[in-house]
Amino acid sequence: MDYFEHNRQSWNELTSLHVESSFYELEAFKKGNNSLNHIELEELGDIRGKKILHLQCHFGMDSLSLARLGAEVTGIDISDASIKKAKELSKEIDIPATFIRSNIYDIKIVSDDSFDIIFTSYGAINWLNDLDKWAKIIQQNLKPDGKFYMIEFHPFIYTLNDDWEITDTYFNNKELVTTVKNSYTDNSNVSKNNLKHVEWHHSISEVINSLISNGLNIDFLNEFPYQVYNCFPNLIETEKGKWVSNKFGDKIPYMYSLQARKI
Ligand SMILES: C[S@@+](CC[C@H](N)C(=O)[O-])C[C@H]1O[C@@H](n2cnc3c(N)ncnc32)[C@H](O)[C@@H]1O
Picture 1 (cartoon, rainbow, N blue to C red):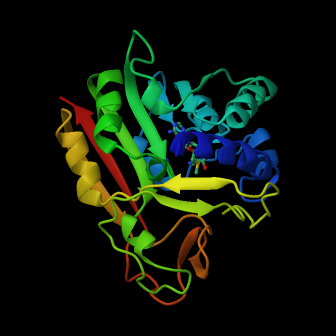
Picture 2: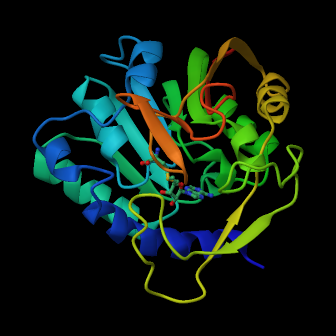
Picture 3: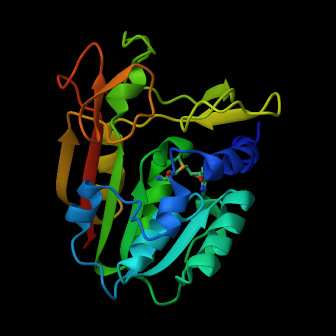
């Protein structure tokens, strides 16, 4: 099974739904809203003048938000539709950025003059099967002392079903193949039948050890008792922008962020 080909096709289909969705608030973004959340904005700090590589940039809202803050951004994504839309958006709002359509595993060196920061966020690494290879690509594309920053859904969340019962193992190293029926944005129906998503869930230790064994030092790892998006079933909003399980509240981890530095 060509996992990445399935994902390329399903993300092509999802992109048009996401562009139209209320979840992504594209119109507000075009008017100047920054699509990044307060956590990554604060943890990234001042990015003016920084050369940033954004892995799995989807249709470019976060990449262009980084560019709006003064960074020189390159975004990479496997989806043709996402990259096409990202380029259109960049033109439309007149914020320059470079967008490349590629499986990140097919790109070894993105630029001869490497990056100050590599960034990836929310729902990215679960589309990757080999974190050792991923960490190598990060290491190869960072300047010495360059920063890798990620913010992701906590892998513990993936052990739970829609009713917040533990139904899956935390230590899942097998591919998970599902038929795409709807999207996290607003449950829009996906029109084509038999589109498949292939995912891999990665434990925290797997993420950290892949970075360490590829020459990165961990600066920090933070875990959060809430979710910034209403993108899983049965979440309730306890404060603006803080979503938790209707069963567990703030007793479990929902997201984590991590910064590492090239030695
Ligand atoms: C959930 S989205 C990224 C989330 C991002 N924070 C956002 O909401 O804009 C996941 C993205 O990963 C991309 N993707 C999946 N597998 C990939 C791969 N092997 N190489 C590059 N991009 C990939 C998909 O096309 C999709 O745009």
